[in-house]
Length: 319
Image 1 (cartoon, rainbow, N blue to C red):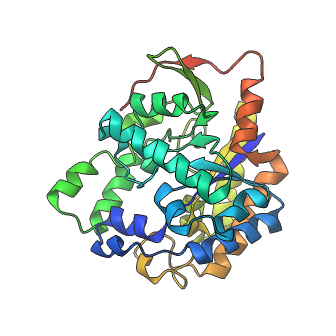
Image 2 (cartoon, one colour; image 1 turned 45 degrees about the vertical axis):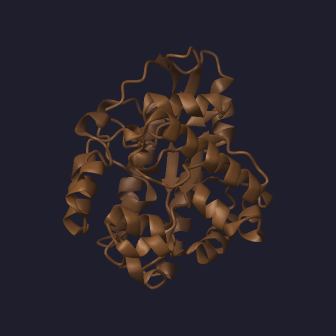
């Protein structure tokens, strides 16, 4: 099996993390993104989990834009209310508010309850996990087991326009080198409350622990599509050889090019036009579907939890 998800971060959230004050007007590309993404998944013949941000769900309301996500066969997940990638720094009451408030907004907007949670910027803590488990979710998906987090953070800081206090808040953005030692396979958190919670990490290349989700593949495609395909095929073959069922991650900028979102032309891969990104999107998902049975994350979680033996248990030790 393989699971497929898309983090529906909006334009304002990228601008906010980058330090652009224009984020406060909440500019959005969702009116373009959701029809484009839903049509692309239809063309690929695949269904995914859409991780939605609560404030966007409140802003869009119970319109057809978000109602179309479950109506067209996809799952919804919780991606926090304000999409602040420093949830590990928040007090327990604030963590609960971020998760519960987002859930309520997503239910109002889509008519469906989230099945899982992913922290913005892969941010998590024991308190986050306790809150997610307390809401009855099937899984968490906030860990990214890779060594290159500090490199990604350095690249980001190089172009970001941030005040010193904002840099401090983002000091652990994308994680530490030691994140690369976390498991790639799913496991169950054993929490202080006695609850357990399935963790499905974003899959990285076995052993090497380098990412191969679509954002990184598109960056490679700028230089050589042949090299991109070779890297992807090797990563997927390595997963099969190691018995790893991939959790494959997508982002809005995997479909939207710089021609559609001028404000984010600084972002890696945004020099690719939208038409080419859509073609590469379908090409990559086709490679995944040829090797695995692809499904939303909730379906994958239910299958994992129904197996014997169950996924191994771990105690949270946040970075």
